[in-house]
Every structure is written in C-alpha cells, then in structure tokens.
Amino acid sequence: MNVNHSNITITESACKIADEICLPDTYLPRVVVIGGGFAGLALVEKLKHKEVQVVLIDKNNFHQFQPLFYQVATSALEPDSIVFPFRKQINGYKNVLFRLAEVEEIQPSTNTIITNKGNVHFDYLVLATGTTTNFFGMDSVESHSLGMKDIRDSLNIRHMMLQNLEQAAITCDDKERDALTNFVIVGGGPAGVEMAGALAEFCKYILPKDYPEYPSSIMNIYLIEAVGELLGAMSDKASSKTLKYLKDLKVKVLFNESVSDYDGSLVTTKSGKTILAKNLIWTAGVKGQFPKGIDEKHVVRGNRLKTNFFLMVEGYKNIFAIGDIAALISKDTPKGHPQVAQAAIQQGKWLGNSLLKIIKDKPVKPFEYKDKGSLATVGKRKAVADLGKFKFAGYFAWLLWSIVHLLSISGFRNRLMVGFNWAVSYFTYEKSNRLIIRNFKPKSLVNETEE
Ligand SMILES: Cc1cc2nc3c(=O)[nH]c(=O)nc-3n(C[C@H](O)[C@H](O)[C@H](O)COP(=O)(O)OP(=O)(O)OC[C@H]3O[C@@H](n4cnc5c(N)ncnc54)[C@H](O)[C@@H]3O)c2cc1C
Image (cartoon, rainbow, N blue to C red; front, side):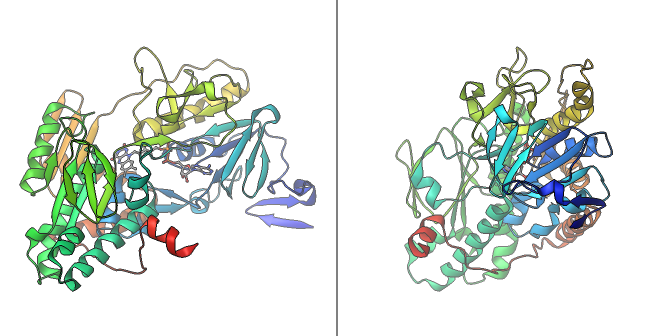
C-alpha cells in the first residue's frame, strides 16, 4: 500500500508499529518540534529544505498570534484573522511534516515521545510548548474567571461580555445589572493594560450606540495590579503615561491589590475590598507547560526548563527548549529571558541556524538575545514605546505598534484583513464582530451541567 502524502510517498514499512504515528522512513536525522508558536515556527522556517526531517507536532492545527487576542475578545477582529494553519505555513517544505497531536510524555532514555495519537521516535527533540495561565492555585478564581492564553479564551471573553450586556438589558434588578456590566481585569502587564484600554473604548464608542437603554457610565472597568505600577518591565515614563491614558478612559486602576477570591459575582481582594462583577479576566501570570518525563531538577521558577547557552535542556544532549518554556539562567539573565515574542523568535532562529552544526559536532556560538525594545498600546493613538534610549508615547508610538504587529501576523490574507479592520475602525470607531454565535457558560457551570 502506498499513501501519497504532500510530495512524500509513505510506504507500509513506515507504519509498521501499531502504536506509532505514521511518518515516512528517512535516512536524515529526525528533529521533532513540539509546539508551533513563535519559537517553534521560527525554528521550522530555518530548517526548511535542510538535511533533516522535521516533524512539527501541535495540539492545534494552527499558529496563534497572541498579542492580538484582546482584539478578538473585544469584538475588533475575527479569530481567523490572527490564527494561521500549520499545513498552509509548511506548504512546499518537502522535509517538514505536521502532525496534530498532544504530547503527553517524553521518554529521554528511548528517544521517544508519547502523544494522545501514538508515539514518535526522535533523534533531536525541541520543546517549544510555551506557557499556560497561572491562577496561583486559586481554584475559585480559576473556575469562575477567564484567562487569555488561547484563541478560544478570547472568543469566550467576547461571548461572556456580549451575553452579560444583553442580560443587563433584560434584568430589572439594579444590583444584578451592576454585576453584569462591571469588568475586572487582573494584571497590569501589557495584556491587562491592552485589554482594559480596548474595553474602555468599547464602553466609550459602542455602548451608547448599541445599548441606548443605559448610560455608558454603567460599565465600570477595574484594573487590579499587585505592585505600585503598570507595565513593570517598561520604563517609568511608559508606566506613568499608560496610567494617564487609562485614567482618561475612566478605567479604575487599583495598585498594590491582589485578588484572593472570586465566586463568579463578587471579587475579593487580599486587603478585603470587594467588587461586584460577573466579568473577571485574568492576565496576572503564566507558568510553563510541558509534557511529563523531564527530570524535575531541571525545572526552575515559573515552571520553565533550565537550558545552557546552546538552549539544550540541562542534563540532556539531544533535547532543547526554546521560547517561553526555556530559561537560560546566567549572570545577565538571572530569571531567564523575558517571555515575549522577540525572545521566542530569536531562540527559534538561533537553534535553526545552529542545530545542523550541533548535529555534525561543529562548534557554535552561544545564544545571545538582542533586546529590540518594547511597545504597548492602550487604544487608538495611545501607545508607549521604549526603544533603547528612545522612549516616547502617543501617536507615533501607536503607529509603530500598529505597523510592527501588522507585519508580524502570519499570512498575507490575515494581514490584509487586520489592516482593513483597523482602517475602518480608525475612521468610524466601529468594532464589527459583535456576534453571539454560541452560548458561553463559565467553566464552573459547564462542569455542573454537562457531567
Ligand atoms: C494575551 C497575550 C498578549 C501578549 N502580547 C505580547 C506582545 O504584545 N508582545 C510580545 O512580544 N509578546 C506578547 N505576548 C507573549 C508572547 O505571545 C509569547 O512570549 C510567545 O507566544 C511565546 O512563544 P512560544 O513559541 O514560546 O509559545 P507559544 O506561542 O505559546 O506556543 C506554544 C505552542 O505549543 C503548543 N503546545 C503546548 N503544549 C503542547 C503539547 N503538550 N502538545 C502539543 N502542542 C503543545 C501550543 O498549542 C502552541 O501552539 C503575549 C501573550 C499573551 C498571552
């Protein structure tokens, strides 16, 4: 039996073991990459058409552009304009294969990974599995709130917001209406700040048109931050300007507060403050995610994998980690590199360039991160930029943010769609995707009703 498989003919001999994922036999070294995020995809791009067989495995069949999740969550963009199918990405790459599977375990002693669809043997393994939301063990918060680490989370937030606004128009109970129209965002990093700004713009420009039955003052947006400043990783100037932008948009920023409990309606902070809100969006932390099987002594703060300067996971010669999951601890980077797209892309590219040399036992230079600066936006014409010693805010920072993000999105069609949506919204203040296309239920209710 022959199966024709995107330019590679797979013969029966390739699938001889029942519990193995079907892959073509090859004389080339096999590099298995788990995760097609920024890091994994940058690596695959560098290894295309090279003398290795690359097997990209991801639990989704698409790459996600996480920096714009908040725009899907607030109805500004369609989800399919910021995700991109892996198979389309690797079209024409004859040495690259994609398999849709979730990796559950790594067995370093036999160079095997175990997935929910079967096993795969590797010569070299690259972990690029990124992070997941960290609720810091607060089960009540996790089961009633929404994180923003997956495109499905963004769609859930959009549905939660629109359903609750509709419900607010129905209810005659003032307290219930307050809870339905109050939004709490936890975490004053870029994701929290951008989400708060986008919601505030929704409240300013969309609410009065779509929901004339109540004043825009009915929608309160709270941003809770555990320390005394926003955007802690950026400059003081960026931090204070962001605070001003948010205050101008009537966001209530609570500093030095952290959430200790949430029952789906009442947010309680450590200092005892309470806020009535049925919308809680959690952006306050992430933790590394990776399959079991890696020796725990190589796992460091934030559940990341400690690597050497060649991005090899400590203790292993043929297992590498790149992107958010990797922690290259050194004198200059005692906490590892920042968990941002730039670091992930640079590590993916570096490993792509170096792996062939490592395979052939040739010398390679250690990985070095080049910080290209940081950008964050709060809303239209409101952004902050730290580019080395140049620190600025306002229209040009926002323009730069828009261009950088537009150019970073995978796929020409996606860039076109996002650019078009932004242009329309720039002139009309419109957000075009205010559709409730399925019934959203918080995690706590799904468990109660669907088991
Ligand atoms: C809301 C939000 C906003 C952000 N904004 C910015 C920003 O403005 N600028 C910036 O630089 N950074 C931003 N970031 C951070 C940036 O997105 C991350 O640093 C980057 O995505 C890390 O890339 P990665 O490849 O390491 O992981 P990811 O992009 O998270 O990719 C991990 C991949 O691994 C797959 N995977 C995980 N586990 C398994 C498994 N067991 N089996 C199979 N597949 C698996 C996942 O499906 C995913 O495709 C933001 C992040 C979020 C969540």
